Length: 215
Image (cartoon, rainbow, N blue to C red):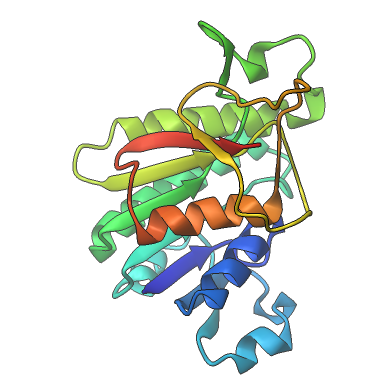
């Protein structure tokens, strides 16, 4: 497949880029700083780095012709994280539709997963204040996606803790509840998160749904 990957040089985007390339997919990396991408990725011949801004109307033209869009868009570097993230997600949804790309896969957050009926992670007292705006933005983005009637979208939320680790391919999938292991920990490696996302790209199992991955 030919994938348009927004945020391909970021924390999660980099893992998605590497996993997609390792499986033989072509990747158009839509990033603000194409020079951040490693030279060996360019050498594969299946990666094209393109300077892009999700708020630029030119985004639709950059997405056109791809089999799918994967958004690893993040507002972490901005002072107005919540507003910037939502403006960006609206622009990505609109551009994907205008470009006629059949699928949109989105990196979600763990904050909107439930730890008890009606109680989401972001609303618990223990949730870190510094991640609140990001989590609330991702929660609103999920609402935006669920309002779409003509877009084939999927959002993948990670576990509460996601960090570089091992690519095991051994994990569980869930829907709207936070996954925890036998010791009560909720975690997933970046590498296995990427496996779950590219698995979904190749074999769609969650059309117009949010799902999650964890150990």
